[in-house]
Image (cartoon, rainbow, N blue to C red):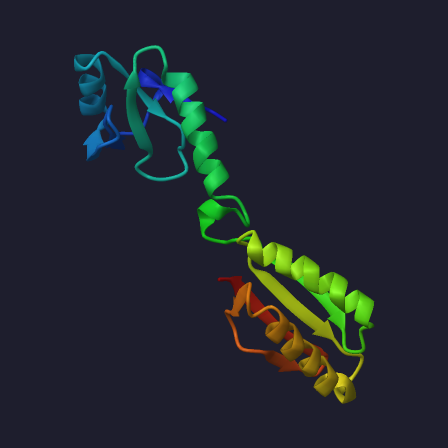
Length: 171
C-alpha cells in the first residue's frame, strides 16, 4: 500500500482531517501543507482512489506508521462479511426432510450453542422433491419451537420447491 507524505501528495485539493480527528473539509494542497507546517505535523494521504483524496494531519515522524494502521483498520472494516461492514456471519445448518432423531438432536444442540453465543443461525431443510415440502416445513417448525428459548425468527419460514428455511436471531 502506497502512503504519500507532505510534498509527495500531488492532488490540487484534499479532504482534510485534523490532528484530533476533526473534519476540516476540502482544502487546497498548499493550504493543507501550510497547516501541517504550522502545527509541526505531517500531511498523510493513504488513498488516491477518490477525488479529492482523503488526507490527515498526524504528529511529525509518525506519518507512515499511523497511516498504515489507519488504512489497515479501514480495510478490515470494509472486507466481505465482517462486522464493520454491517454484514454479520450467519451460521447455516442444513437438515434433510426425513432426519433421524439422533442427527436432529445434534444439529439442535449446535444451533442452540450458536444462538446462546449471540450469533444468528440460518436453518435450511432440503427436500428431494415437492412431495417432501410438507415434511421439510414440519422439521423447520419443530426446530423453531425447540429453539424458542434461545432465538427468535428474523424471517418467516420460507418454503420453496426444494425445501424450507428460516433465519433465527439470538434473544
